[in-house]
Image (tube, rainbow, N blue to C red; front, side, top):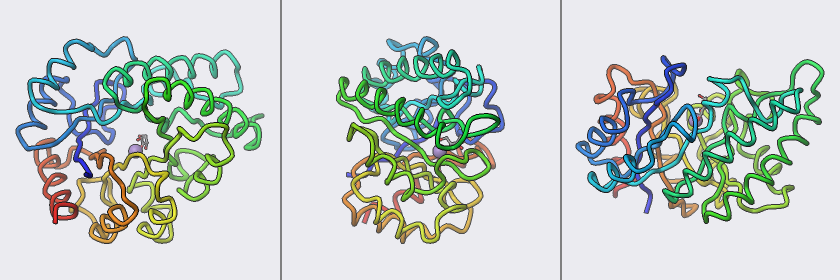
Length: 272
Ligand code: LER
Ligand code: MN
């Protein structure tokens, strides 16, 4: 069963970014449940900032799950990432993510490595950055496995990273790791910029896809841009995808309209 999710940001520094709800976990859970979502995806400033007992209670009260936990707060708040030239910063980035994996594990939800992958710049060559990324993903992927959840690696568009921009490049890289527990996050917004054919790329990545960010071509709710939703949904169903399809989008024209449009497009595309 493919399930629906919608994002909530608890990170003040992310203001203006692609997250739907901004007014805390209680507001997000109540709003998402009212519309009929299966889950919420949480973007928090740190593991410690997540009120776990409150989140457990809210999810239970509203009949929701946690779909995933973003780790990009480590970049936005501290400017840490996994391929930074400074070993102390790389290590802080890794421990920041490890702590979010531990919180996610408690909710049976994976952590996402998106902006925390960093990029090759200055004296750091791409080869060097990829060596550090491989070490970090192997370590953190094995850590996530102890909780019985995968770790999600997200290729980003060229303006956000020069490591991997497409699913197939990232797929080949993940195949070289000493763990099978790192899955791909297919963000349809990034893919719209970088892939030749989104549905075909999804078919090729197949079983490696562990999560989907459901965004239209302009990063608004699916249905507010020109992405061919039906083809993409068909490809996900054909490869037997069973995870969450999560609206990581701008809250345009307002959060509840964006969320409602996401769910309407989700149901049209997947519930047949
Ligand atoms: C994170 O999921 C993402 O898609 C990046 O663009 C960071 O915002
Ligand atoms: Mn994303």
